[in-house]
Image (tube, rainbow, N blue to C red; front, top):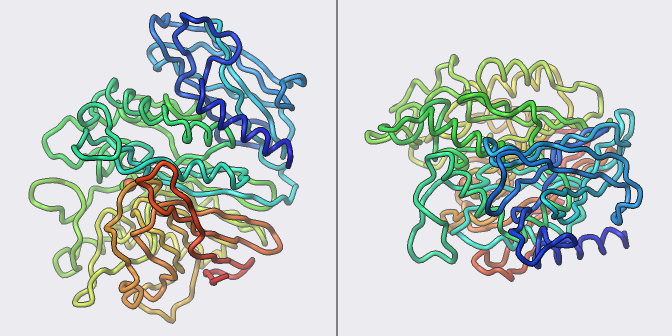
Length: 502
Ligand code: FE
Ligand code: CA
């Protein structure tokens, strides 16, 4: 515990002061690790280590050395190697050490062009037969010009094993007047523009510190490309959307600790995957964006989302439509872990629970799972029929903290609860700034729904007590030094679907 705290302090200091210039710095050197370092996708024997070289006059190819040690002073080195950072991939580095020991913490760092990065901390997942607890947080929607990243500073103190980032890591929009801080440039459309946007976001010291403290798992949503996009159809009608998506996907891979095997090819990129946490849990990370059918009943001037009653859009009940695509739907159906006692955590990007917003006539928001209700019913029917244990759906996107029971039939409050849902609000992105409490009478399966709160949700999962969730809310995301508090606690008991207040 002592070592842990001391290391976090070092991370904060290093990230705040001078990333990349710790030991080998020359006075005239351009910082080579200005965007920080990160790790992700922990398995029982390794993980992905990431950085991207920065600065002037970078050669087209640069050898980058990486090191993994069992201690923070790097005396007990257990793995090392070199990767070639290429200009064609934005000088990004994705190193994949293997053969590490399960269930323990490691420290890592990079060296290139005479400079050394700060040291980061990461960990492996527990061994396949180990039953160890998991502490994690879900986060999403960190629009740069909507606030400061105080949430990351607070999350650093939570002593987590894992961060799940569930989409809207960047926003593609151009600069707008009167914001607390400003994005650089216009809307991101080309590869250089998306790269520049990531570089700006990753310059933030609190975000860098959280990346350097624990491994992350990633799910993307729409704003990494364009608002409300669906498959190969963007929101704006007149544009070369496939070219834009290809640029956005490439920049995404270049800037996150994702496996090398997921490097995009043309307009496609693998993003769904599965990570086990010993015998305790399996995490199914989904891609709700790349393979979905186009949105239905869009407005006249664009392809994006709409909110309307079934009467105006009966096609919403077409069972042939999918949110995940046929192949990924099958992959999920075949991959549920039905071992008794196992937790099946589903990391994906948006609200799965039914959310009717009208007392007059029930409405459907076409961008979320409500816009693909038959696909949602298929997924939940499968869970129910096969009695998949302990299914918990995690999401983001709606800029609201939402906690819900997922029902076999949302139109029948007495129908069985099949799974539990925690949809986290935003790190900064604005919500409607009003309470959603009124909607709980229209949607009785909701336990909590507020869109006037920024923050994240923190979880502790263990075999005996189940899943404990804390709704963490910033005092004011417009302030760099904002405090944070817990506004609600929930629990999901082992072997019993549905959320209870704690
Ligand atoms: Fe968002
Ligand atoms: Ca979104």
